[in-house]
Length: 338
Image (cartoon, rainbow, N blue to C red; front, side, top):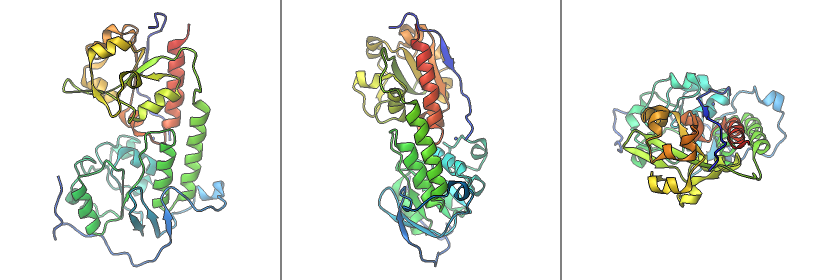
């Protein structure tokens, strides 16, 4: 417990660049590509010299064939009609300078504002081939959580190039995702520039050790019906540790995530609460949050030590993750200062 901790509420700030359907004749098939390409592994640009100044503005080099995250060989002949099936993947596409080519996104895409304003094809975990095919995409980009698998199979059978990119919740995850998306879109050099910048920011803001690290509890909330403590499988796990904190999930033995348990939370006495904006809003803001799992009786609750950020930023492991880590590090230092 930190009796001297100061009140610290970090509000959302936008950072500058962040059931199966059955195939039928009513669903338009993708045009057939007749070009030939070379094969490259997604996320591994060719080992050639990269002229950063010139390559950053270069047009996509297409067609390209990649081996995606689940081992599928996918050929992409055009990137003029991109549909990212994940909010953070959409953010990567925009960060690579190809946002104008995005014709639709899934419900999780909230940043940048241009992505949030695009038509939606539904939620990435409950996709249908019909909702996607009507936009005639030339390439689809998703992570492994996209589904159901039947819908993805339908899209593949119809000829739509579908690339699954990595989504690892680790310090290396954001850069790997960027490189994979960039390779699939024919702009690996742009991806390398962005990935290296992100890796540098993460490395320069990681806390190797802290004298008195705060205990930080990361929550996923959707009203009274869904209240979970996020575990090691969440992006917030490595962010908490890298920013100099101790993840409450480690003390509670939580891996994938676990329902909020007031007795367990009170026993560990978290110093800081980390929660996505939408979750905080769903329980009625800070006041409502204090009623969740006895949080109001913890050091974090007594000091209103709540860090709330945009869901996509906090959970997505995307291009803005380095800047987020820098903010979290500063916040943790503020809260643990004498």
